[in-house]
Length: 97
Image: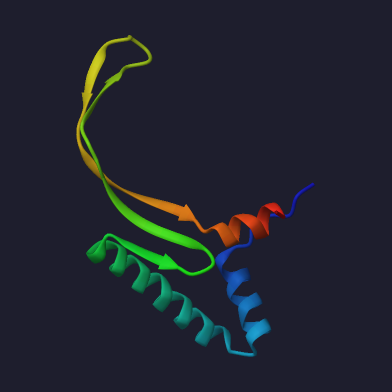
């Protein structure tokens, strides 16, 4: 059976233990990294998190779709979405290549 995913508090505790920093300092640094990534992705359209991947803000064009229940054709409006592209280093590390 696989391990449970690490919660935010467990991650903070782990990072604090490994870095010999206080949980408060690690929490502040984590929030600063996340906030910076959000702001950069919002203003510049993308931000790279070295070793993890890239957050990308992308415009999705309007398109025709189909209602699966009725089969009726519908117009899907254009919208902006956020994507995360995983770095090659992360893929290789996780998948063991």
